[in-house]
Length: 259
Image (cartoon, rainbow, N blue to C red; front, top):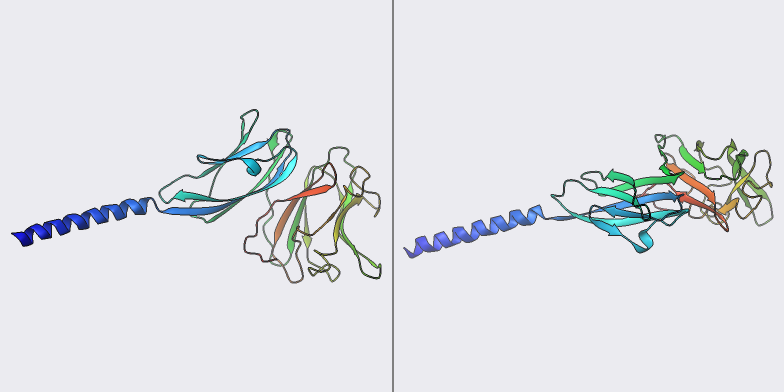
């Protein structure tokens, strides 16, 4: 009789443990790296929420500024739908609602908000033979065509210039094929020495934005331009003159690229 009683107790404890394990499995915590890169061209700040998590402080997108939002979002395994919502903090209007990919550990969103609406961002397919660089020029003072080129000088004062695009009009996406040439192919002669310049088409010193060099030329350190041997990259940039200098937003995410 005692043996039967002990066996019954053992079965009860085992079943209780199995139920607890099943409940624990349903609540396994996972995490997703969520990145939102882009530019907020409105006069109001924008707030991000993911499901019921509201991001504040330095995670709020400031008016007329670029942003690089990056968080590790934790959720339970049985949580079916994970959704990013971007809301205007003044009007309370929902600007964007986008589900996150199911079963993934990373999610990247390119977000460009201009003229009261979200602009379509559709990068071209990657090409294993080259790189694709994309530029959106946000400049409303005029629509004078411009040229885009890389520029540096060496220790002897010799000038090096490589054009990325010519006769570009603001307000549209431009994509160009790019492979690093001999003059701009290492971290030393790119990240440490080169500038990205925007001049009126056909000139090298008539600055495109407000006739101002500081607002038309920027160091490329941080832009992660392709170096020697790199192919298959697709990298987009929103370029706009800020109050004091030229600024840009990176509209891509290469988490596994070591630079």
